[in-house]
Image: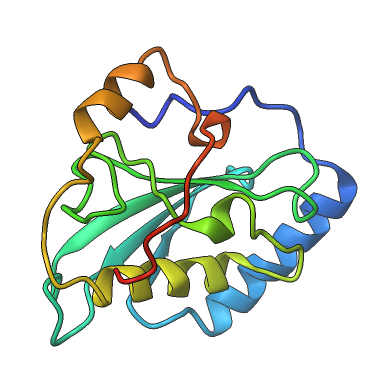
Length: 161
């Protein structure tokens, strides 16, 4: 998946701009461990470097998350995907889409980019195997033409990894 794909982009609301500026300022003072925000002038799309936690299958491996913020953030969840190459994980598809409930049905406006990043790192860290989801090929084929993961009706049935 390329970094140009994503949701149709409407400009951020004033509330979203204020919230993101606050989150970015807090991030610059105290970033979550294992993450680095790649500075750009685009407040609506963040690229975040993720380093696998020590003592896990992903220790010292580096990946990139792309976070696209919708017009009504934080009332609506951001779209979060891994840029290529996505880590091998039972809940991460080869196109970078992430099956994690807080990115969809369980989103709360109280969540922040930092809390989302920590949840993703926790998901990576708890995995005992490096493998793609069983339905990876079918799912990725159905997501061609830039389909957003937010258009997917996810089935959150496995909380073991």
